[in-house]
Length: 138
Length: 124
Image (cartoon, rainbow over all chains, first blue to last red; front, side, top):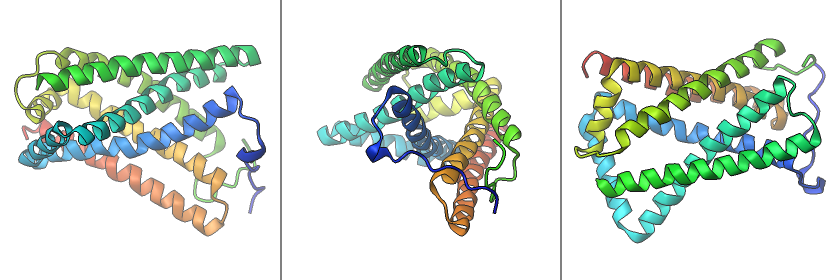
């Protein structure tokens, strides 16, 4: 066996910092996207091979949304998916800049971190709003 | 990058790094396109959603970009998942199993997306 990889810092004894929290969030949102992306694949599969099934699924979502608690569940699930996508996108751009050697200073990393959080929140609110508007229109 | 354990991951360190970045750049562009494209459909949806979605995917440029986006996404996801597995799953056998499952998950859904979009291309 080759040299083992170093163990990640033990989260319990490690003081939370912008850099470490953004890093672990990048991983968590990446995992979340790997759970949500297959939903798109499965829906495409239904569209192609079982169009009536795709219609049924849309119908179930509408029924779920007409129930108060169902609507809460739908809202939270959509928010998690959208938040994950935007966070991973914006923080990924931050890491790309780091890879190019830009913004590696501690202050810059702090500022860009906050920038990512603000951009993610803004984009998520806009996306959720258009989703709700589109949903209300159906 | 040298000295990683590379149990299952046969991609070299530099290759892995570049694949991660190139798929990331492609995804930034494709997701940007997706939001612009979706925002043009979002207003005034009157027919059932699945029919709107089907017609949208059947347009050649949309289908091509969506297929490309999903392949890049699952490729990127496989690389990222592999890194997480190597960081947290230390037993050699279990590490290997996790890499296999990650590969299976990503290839299955990437394949499903491409086959489905390809079928819709042929007129459904």
